[in-house]
Image (cartoon, rainbow, N blue to C red):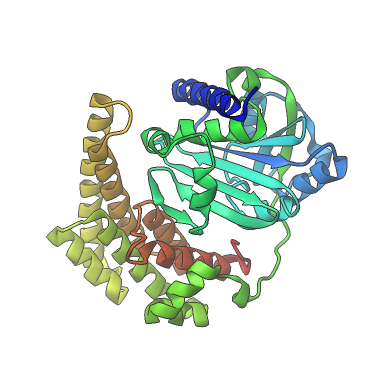
Length: 380
């Protein structure tokens, strides 16, 4: 077969996979994280994967997805903080996690794929999708399919361009595109039949902490924005707990800018966040923010019902909802500031911050610094 003919065949297969996964949304669990790791035939590589995910090999047992999901929510011992279903197929191991997933942790992915590949997809019930790909211990790409411009590092666009799944498919249905890409990389189809098959259930425990050197926290893209932006540079140069109020403030400002929120209520909220005031007046504003968030949420749901598939107006309303939720977190009373900073930065990240003005990298810096302040570890 000529190379050009082979490419056509591959394209048709992946296009078919995209269609299959677009139809499989009602069948697959939500929320969920699936990670594909190229472990080869090595038992040692598989054992290393289990260990780095925090798995206890002594808990390994035959299980279907339904079995594991039931255990995860009802039967875990008090020390376990997660569970995974693992399936070895040829050169790849598939790991599926119902909650508290390790598969979204870039550091863990870099470790398990130090000399191979790891591809991870996480999705939520409201169709938020996160894709991460690591090769030979280096982050190749992590992104939200709705906003491909958010991809980091920048070099990840070259990898994406080499895939058979098109940019249009990513934007139309990120969930289907992400799983079709997994099938292109691994040859493994994830469907209802796979969920019914018996694999290996393993309970997960908090992995041992690994102190990080602050100098290791940032990748080149993040270091570049820290050099250009004095506020971000001050946080990155000395990542200490006293920086948490500023992290919360910057994350809130980025979310508002990304969503183009222009309402007096939002300005009121930003003033309280800037001063760190979470008193009675701030809570009255927070109460009204809940109503605003719910309004955007209901409008978004109506658009989704009326226009299945990709709808720019639905996406716009979803971003506004996430931005308001960011403000709600930022004003939450009686909560540890490190926790608030984590919630605020993570939610702001889902508002599709601008790549052009540097907000995308600013949020990435805030997230890795906040994670470091909470755990002493690096996300990279």
